[in-house]
Image (tube, rainbow, N blue to C red; front, side, top):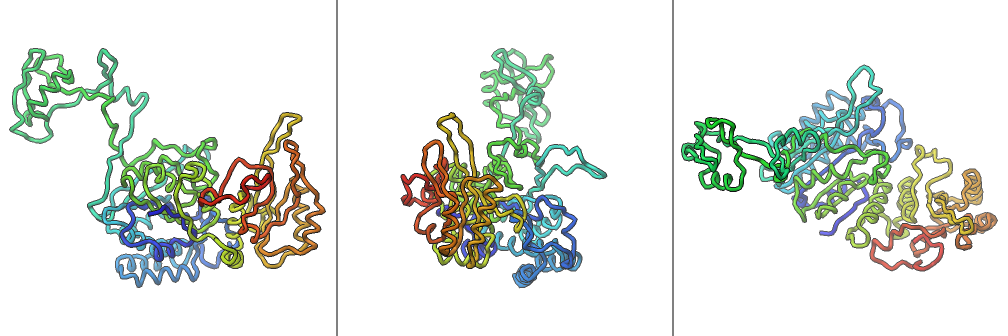
Length: 548
C-alpha cells in the first residue's frame, strides 16, 4: 500500500476510500474549539459567531444541517447502543455546539471501528472539555469491555495564573481495542538521575549498579522448595512458597555473581538485578516524562495543537509492528504520519484544510526528502479542479495555491482580516559589497473570484509600500486585463544586490501558468518542493529566479 494523504472530510474519505478491517492502528486528536474560550460550547444556535469568521485551526462544528445529518446517520447505523446513547445525550444537551460535536464524532467513530482490523487499537486524544462524553461514545462503539486504559499526559508545565480552580495541565488519551487479540509491545519508561540512584542503590567493584530483589516465589511451588548450598559455603533455606527459580538457574546465578548474600546466615538469599540489563519500568497510565514542545524546539512548526513526536512514537511502538498501517483522520500538522514513517509503518492521513495538507507535505519533504513515497489525493491536479475549489471554497483555494507555489499562508488574523496579505514567499537577499545577507518576504495576494481588475493590482502595490516589500505576487484564476498588466509593469523591477539579477516587482500569476509548470520569479530559495516529491522533472530547472 502506498502512503496516502487525503484532503477532504474524513467521513467521506473513510466511506469511499478505506476498506473494512484494513487499518492496524488509529490515532485521532479531533479539534474542538482549539485555543478558544470553552464557555461558547454550550451556547444555543442563536448565539453569535458566524462560520465565515472562524479560523482554519478553530472548531467549525456547529449544530446545523450537517450535524442533523450525522445524528440521523447514527440513528440508522444499526448500532442501537450508540443510537440510544446519542439520543439520550441530545435530550440532555439540546441542539448546541457540544451536541453537534458529539453527533459528528459518533458517526466517525462507527466508521473508524469498521476500518480497524480485529488486532487493531484506537487512541483518542482529547482534553477535559468533552472527554466524559467521548468515553461514553467509545464504550458504545467498541464495547466497554474493549476499553483498556485512560492515559493522562502532562502536556504543559504549571500555570502561574490559576484563579479559583486547579491548573489544567493534562490531556486524556483513551486506549481502546477491537478484540482481545490486539497487538501489544510492552513499553518501558527509563529511570534517570536521582531516581535511578535510588532504585539501584548498590554497586559492584566495577561500578555496575544493582538493586536487590526477592527470590521468593509469589505462589506456593513445592517443586521449587529445596535447600541451596551457595558458593560462600552457607546453605540457605527457601521461603515456604519456594524459590522463584529451579536449582539449575540458581547455580547459574551463583556462578555469574548475581546472588546477594545476606549479612546473617539465616537471612534471605536475594538476587542482584543490574540496571544496565533492565528495560526500565513498565509504563503506567500517567505519562509525565514527555515534555510539551517548547518555543525553541527544533520540531516546532507553529501549529497550535501540535503534539511531540515522542508521544506518537510511544503509541505507535506499543500498538503496531513494522509494516503495519497507521491512520490519523484529523492529521493536522502530521505528527502521527511523521512518527509512522520514522518507525517503518505505512500511513494514511486525512485533513479538511489545504493549510494542513501543505504543511504536512513540506514537513515530510524536509525530513525524508525525495526517497519518501506517498500520494496526495483530493488536491487540485488540473485547471478545472482548481477552478472548482476556487469557486466553492475560496479560503481553501487560497491556502492551497499559496503553498503550491512555495509560499507560507498568512495566519496573522481571522479570515477577512488579512490586511491585503494572503501569504509570503521567503527568500535570501545577499549584499556582496557589504558581505551581509537577510531573509526577505515577497507578499502574495490571492484572488479566487472571476472578477479581477486594475484596482486590485493598485491595492497590492499599496500593501507593498506599506510593508516595505520589494516583490509582490498577484495570484488570480483568470488571465489579467491589459490595464492590470500595465499597472504591474509600472511598479518597476527589483535588482538582487548579490547576483544583480532583475525581477518584476509586481508579478501577475495565473492558474494557467501554474499548470504549465511556471512559477513566480523571486531570488533562489533554499527549499525545493512540488516536482521533486511527485517524481517529475522540474520545468524551471536551472531558470534563475524560478521558485523551484
